[in-house]
Amino acid sequence: MPSCSRCNNKFSSLDEKFRVFLSAEENRSAAGQHILSTKVLSAESVKGRPFREIGISLRPVWVESGPLTVQKWKLSMPKKEAEAFLFRLTQGLIFKYYPQLHSLKAYFHLEYLSDPNEVNPFIALLNSRIPVMKLMRIGIDVFDYRHGAENEGSLWEFVFYGSVRFVVVHSFRHHPLFD
Image (tube, rainbow, N blue to C red; front, side):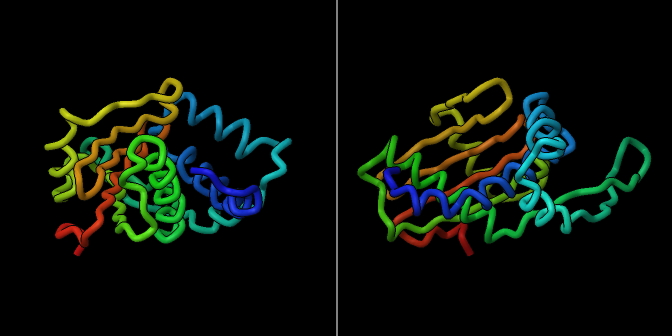
């Protein structure tokens, strides 16, 4: 979506924090590992501030690994920041693919789909629409997205580094699943 340099550049720190969050995912692809080692954790990296900001969220979590429950370390990102990044991305893609649906008065809802087996109405919504959604791929396991639109809005699935998955619902009216 067209924007001036000042407006676009004000998001650069947020973009870097989101890249740290995505590339730190345990099941990331080789492309995600490359970003983590060469861009995030590299000695030459001059963008240490976003890593330090998100690094303070590092916490232990207990996960099932076969018959065992093991402790692993996980980064998190504030939902408001993830929404800011993903809603801006979605708005730009709506502007590109569905300009008739682009509006600053639209509603957006974000779901982080960390477990495909979880009971979540957004997973059911997405699965029901996947057959008619268009798939776009940028790189090999770098960024995949699906999209589809109807008169009252659009549905987006974003997959980063083959492992981090989100769904964004965009609507002109308050969607019943938003509550």
